[in-house]
Length: 162
Image 1: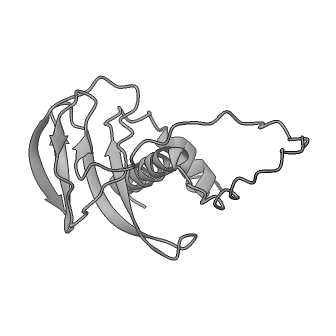
Image 2: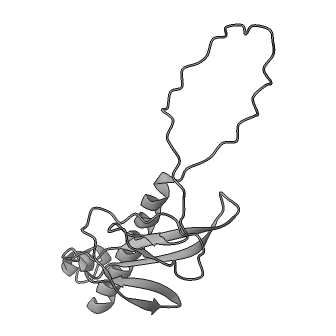
Image 3: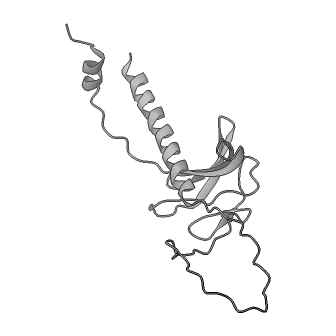
């Protein structure tokens, strides 16, 4: 195996891992709404006291999932890409926000390119748990690749040993 193809493979695996991590991080705040049964009509008889279980989780005010735009950390809004109508919330991360400089297309997928080299996009992806396509918003930040000792790879593959 050539060294350049090993480096390319490591890069591809890294990008795939970043995409998966971004997707999982983004989906961590999905709000599930529960429809409650209508309240019983009030009667003229006095209500009997009943024991109620304490609510173990505090009630949280649900935020709207989408505004029809991607909302960036600086408050700017851009239309979603790739035919998405209502994008999922953007999870930018802890990196400082970097403004969008252009739109790029890679293998048929449109991406916003940011000044620091970050990319963001929206896509519809099949969710087997929902039984339908669902909007996802991805954000990928550039990182310096970790140094790889190719000698370790050769040793693991049995190259150079007799």
